[in-house]
Length: 55
Image (cartoon, rainbow, N blue to C red; front, side, top):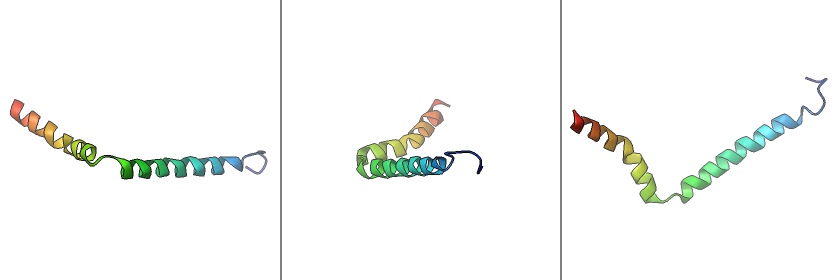
């Protein structure tokens, strides 16, 4: 690895991408509307109830 010139930039780029992803994710979680979160969290239950009624 020492013989490759410019390789020290890759860990820095990886850290920036990783940090940016989680900053954006936290921002989205804190700014999401409560109605949307509730609707999405109830989707698996609604789909399960629909499958039971079809049987």
